[in-house]
View (cartoon, protein in one colour):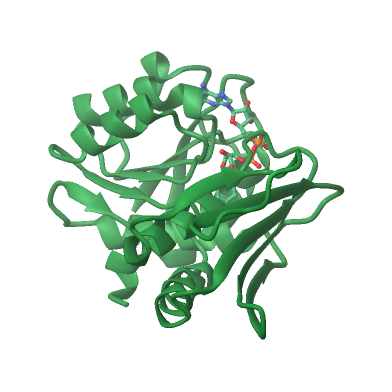
Length: 248
Ligand SMILES: NC(=O)c1ccc[n+]([C@@H]2O[C@H](COP(=O)([O-])OP(=O)(O)OC[C@H]3O[C@@H](n4cnc5c(N)ncnc54)[C@H](O)[C@@H]3O)[C@@H](O)[C@H]2O)c1
């Protein structure tokens, strides 16, 4: 499986490239795209998709949401399966992703970790069982992260909203008003080199259940993205996610 890595020169792009070069999940690094270039892996790396090599079996994207339009255009033109791991897309960009999935297979997940896929299920279950409990999500990441809240925190909130349709999201907290019962609070912390921590606190006046996931290494997400690429081989058009792969 020949892969093109979008965002090849970035932290995650490099992890994917290293794993692909070691043959992880049957992948072989064939090409890259990065606005800032990257000559470190001995494969052609274009500065934009207009010059990119299309002789690949799948695209794995860990770049910036601003690349979405160009990336989708390239994938659609060449009929290439796409693993989208970049986070922080606007509503408009998300709509374009959903539309593209009508024509090509698109794997779109805010977090490629198996443990986080499990956390999503557990959080939904806790919110349903403890139906009167208040819910707060805390996410902690390294100081280079651009988007807040994290895509995973938003995915957790969306999963909880499936069983709490009347809930509202509240990002950050300041001022003098009390929280409302329906609120799902999301708090973002940025510091140092923390790979990623997500906590879902589900609490009543008498007890609190805290579900916590901590990622130790970025290689976790890179391997998950390559597993997703492998999963997409031979699949028809559609929007796939971790739940599709794990059939949870
Ligand atoms: N889904 C997941 O499991 C997961 C895990 C980790 C990171 N991420 C996301 O992946 C993205 C990249 O993270 P990172 O830590 O590697 O960031 P990074 O800043 O280290 O790397 C991003 C790379 O993309 C390149 N880039 C920027 N704009 C581009 C464009 N328009 N076209 C092509 N390349 C472009 C940059 O030059 C850079 O090399 C972020 O959105 C991050 O939130 C997702």
